[in-house]
Picture 1 (cartoon, rainbow, N blue to C red):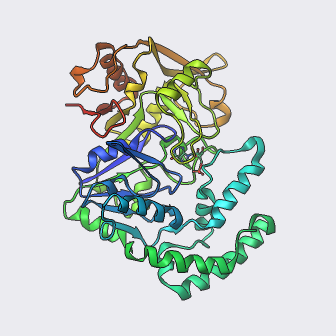
Picture 2 (cartoon, rainbow, N blue to C red):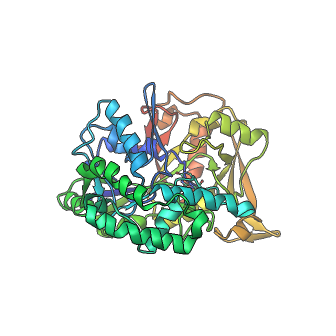
Picture 3 (cartoon, rainbow, N blue to C red):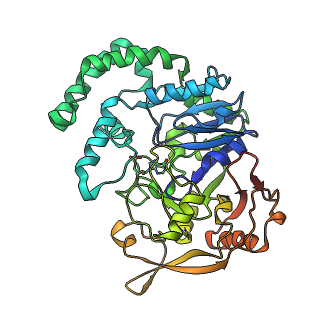
Length: 424
Ligand code: IMP
């Protein structure tokens, strides 16, 4: 059972890219199974910072197989840019990157539709990344979507493109489909078909062969548990299943292949986009976390909302995903704070709530019950082991294990590739 799944336990941006990069050395392949260009996985190597949207973070490790599974929605325009950046670093992509023929495509129309809808939502705005994710998954569910494999078959593309244009015009009306044009859609295939052709294959077969022959595969989650379409804070969520179940249909593997689940959480909490955030800090405290943690969206550049770690939401995420190992990131951002707080419970109208309530109508009214921890003054970026950390910092990690209900396996103490502690 050599599959490991790595999942974000918050609202995305947990620093998953860094932990994945750390783990990639020990695996044969890294596979994405959901989401698309809305993700922004940051990996810092020396003076260079890479932000990957579609490509699994493993692409920065020569020789590793990188899989884009059927559960993604893939934007060929963004992917081509990413491939160029990786190639310009002298890294080979051909032969290593595999895109499933079933993967649905994001078209310029989807991006237009996403932004158009957001503009008209007014106060009900979701705060999407504008990458066309929701509309792309809509077309998939409506069974009119164009898939990566269709790029390789011009007559099929043409046969599907006409009805797609018609169906969307009929349902969405003239204004929202202003960008949708059959000629442009045919030209889209001519540009992106040949570019993507070397990578398109049956990744479900590939990933199962790897697992059956005892190879190690790391399944790289994007976004986070609280953004899951079914289990998150709907409707302020993304349009895919970000939790562990997404792996099974999004990569085409069976549960028996999964050996462990790693849940990644920041040492505090952030959220981009709209929706309730019980532990949000406004004013100086929030600004301090944002500035020190460089909390600006890697896909959109938007400032992230910041707050204390919410262990009620964290326990929910640990439970849903069956997390057995925690990765705690950005612990260094808390250095210098006199006091650190953790939310260990919720109250609504003075009554204690049992567990996490994912309804925005409830979540927006909860009062967090906060416990206080002494901070530490020292910078911890050079710590190489748990023992190197200040005593109060070690105490904070131990408390996180207790309130989240899983063992800490990795602690990131800075943005650099080397700044990660593996716990014994
Ligand atoms: P969409 O995925 O672009 O449709 O956006 C839906 C919600 O998910 C918005 O609140 C986004 O800010 C959020 N979101 C999507 N992708 C990410 C991500 O990679 N990190 C953090 N938030 C994300």
